[in-house]
Image (tube, rainbow over all chains, first blue to last red; front, side):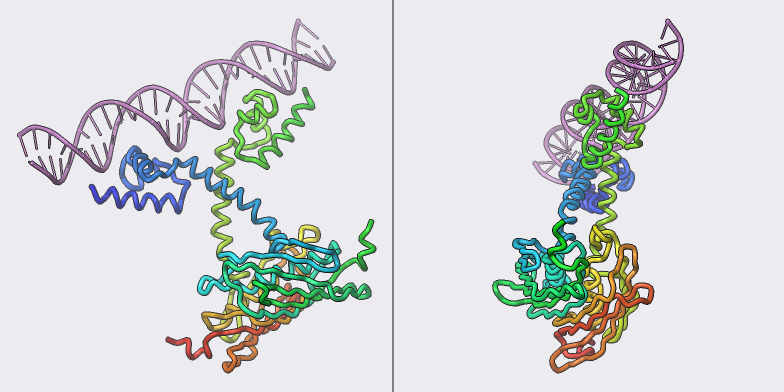
Length: 194
Length: 194
DNA sequence: ACTACTATTAGTACCTAGTCATAATAGCTC
DNA sequence: GAGCTATTATGACTAGGTACTAATAGTAGT
């Protein structure tokens, strides 16, 4: 029985990890031991009771919710902006942005930062990307901080298009460059004032 | 007291919505009524008890977890692929992909689908985007299904570059077109076989 | 064989955050 | 004063536990 205990506790850990919603009673039946044994096991392994486990999962979900919505809204954090002129944002490359194999950032995240910034810099309710011409100058790795600088180079009120140039740097080294042709609904920034 | 009840129930709904972790006792104190009143209110409003609420949040978190990891790996679902030749993926535009104001998909999501597909179609461990020339032909709205088709048009073993053209459609209508110049580490697909 | 020790099981009292049912009370209206 | 709604109180019961004590089985050391 000695080795059975160790084994059982190992399996118990895994079982609870992949399904935190299981009761001690169900666990007892699963491992063919008494409920008390399961409770002793949990005590030894410092595994909290069902309700605490569920609560923990729920709380994490709640934290995530607060975090993930603004992240999706604008990729990167805007640290400076002058509408219709220029803007700067920073974006820290984390685990979830890179290829597993080589820790290099997936292109679309770097693009997303630049594109978000191009949208943000335009002083319009409805700014959409029409075209873009982009170049990835060098790969960005996990842990690096990308600083994107956007500059509005041309505002064409006639066709409602604005050209925004975005350059992204890591330690002053150019990693990405893009020219975005943005579509805007309203004619100019003067119409905005209402 | 008649109107107080309605008001209280309205506020109760909101309170619980923004903080499902609150007990009846805390609610009773907050609204200066008895615990029983809170319970009658929950009964009338069909709001489940604390533990059920927490469990519900936790279960949703668990479902999300299964869903969100593979989504980040490749944007869109690849339904057909012939390495170094062509590939097709589908991407359903949901709430989290659009601007709140007008329900139009953010450009970087449409780009991400195309870019992911361009990476996937290349038969190489290390495929990175070097340049891209893209056009958003028309805006994509929430609820629409984007079908992206990638075609490898040129493989230049000499400089390790591959050109991939991606066209994305909604109901056979072109919404996005891009030419991706991809960097690959290994010389050709024959080297792959090992 | 006796003792020591570990593992397991059983049982009791208690806890939280409730449900469900019944009853009492307060305040207002007709 | 009867009828009604809203509120509060009370008691019995539940799930899924904690904490503690005690009993039992099996194995190892001397």
